[in-house]
Length: 113
Length: 113
Image 1 (cartoon, rainbow over the protein chains, first blue to last red):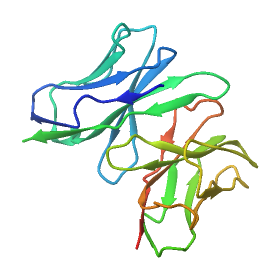
Image 2: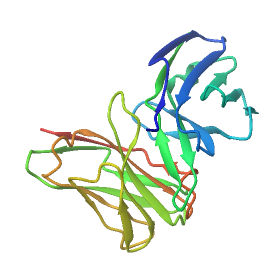
Image 3: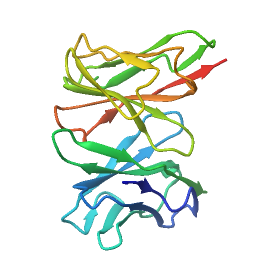
Image 4: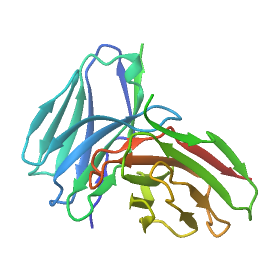
């Protein structure tokens, strides 16, 4: 069956360092992938997405890498700031008559000042 | 000020009581969704609606009911049949057939006493 999971439930990084959050998926039919940021007690916010025909996509301070060979994607945050502290989770999207979105469990990022 | 609103933010309910969670959007989105979020688990789809007066069961619809009488509103009723209703509930909306681009509300935390 399909599954989307994260390797590490909690990640602690020093302010100013780079953060890498990983995600594994198992559905080869996924069209693309989305990363969300969720602050405590709030709804998820879209960060960045990547289509399955791409290997890398960059945004502002964030980069997503997709390795289809091993069904793995990662979110890299450059120069991590205290405001980056949140739960990050990935989602995979399979297109069809209705787009099926499967969400991962999340990794909590703690930024140490 | 466009967006999705959910009310109330916190809700307490006694066992055996039905309770309705509100979700309103002024983004002119066609589709709306309800998710349940539990610790250590990804978002799970309860119900979704792609157009007014139509809705479909998601992965965990048992014990829940919805209505979609207006485009802007998609209330969720948690019935007494839901065995474990304590959770964080998230509402989202998107353009028609664009589940990949969902905007989330701030969530409602339901606690059953």
